[in-house]
Image (cartoon, rainbow, N blue to C red; front, side, top):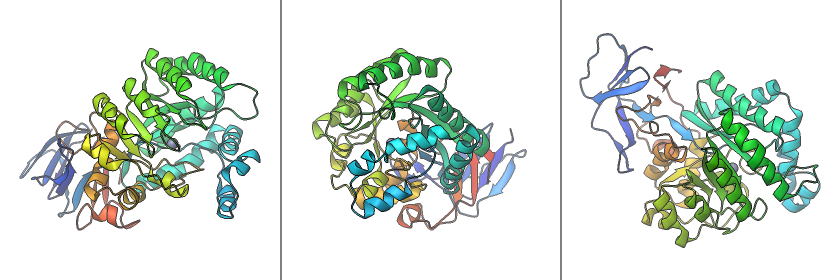
Length: 398
Ligand SMILES: [Zn+2]
């Protein structure tokens, strides 16, 4: 692996106080994929030298919650909803998540991969270097495993760091007589041990909601994950206060995601368990939700806030993390600095990645150069910029 010396950059990153700031340094030395030194007037005779010409160098962005692997799309459903047809009616007619499950099951691995790659490349173009990808549109063993395999291949073909999450407990399988309890048995007794044994995922996720799985079923999934030494996270408090976040905190979840209906009384539990609050403003926008996540209370208890696309065909078909960062500011009231921390350092925490998300000595050299006035430009302007150079694990990929 080559050694790289970036000179004359304006460097910005979250610091250990979770503030997104300009560092008092212009040079970065990368050795063996890691940031070895940050300073001024760094010298290394053997390094490949890159003159940044005072462009900004930021950590690579981390999209910590996506459903990137799926078949088909829900454009027709989108049109119907715009005409006033309810989600319930669409669901009864075989639409909604069921239609995505059927479309995903119908695709072979090569087709599923090529469709997923298109979306992954869109994310990558905007400076994303790490993407979390969930299963959850198979809901049977073969398709769930195919989704996780496709996610792995996306990483191999794009250079992106991919974190995989098993979301077998996303919905009840369509075209099946199985009860919720029986399906959770299958998830806990068959799937989670298999996924863990073959190292197919880094974490386990559950959709805890009235229209998903109840609290007792969610806890069974969390317990099975813990028994298999897998970390947990949850889709919680999206449509109602179901107490999924408090349960997730009890299991030291990496993150609780959506959380529009999170009660303030449960927020100290998240602070104690080191759980990250992941905002998904894209789903809020597409569903025209009005209940805002409790941003002030999350700040009050110093719960780290991350932002993600929730890229999925039904409720958040947005392959742009920076657009979602903008939405978190406009719709939820985050500052631009909070939004930038939310797609870097805090997104890394939401995935349990200890060496990513900051420009810091010893961290992975995932970073981009940007020809911008200031970092906040990236959040202020939608679709305004692309990085001019990019490194993932020290390897130059742009
Ligand atoms: Zn989701």
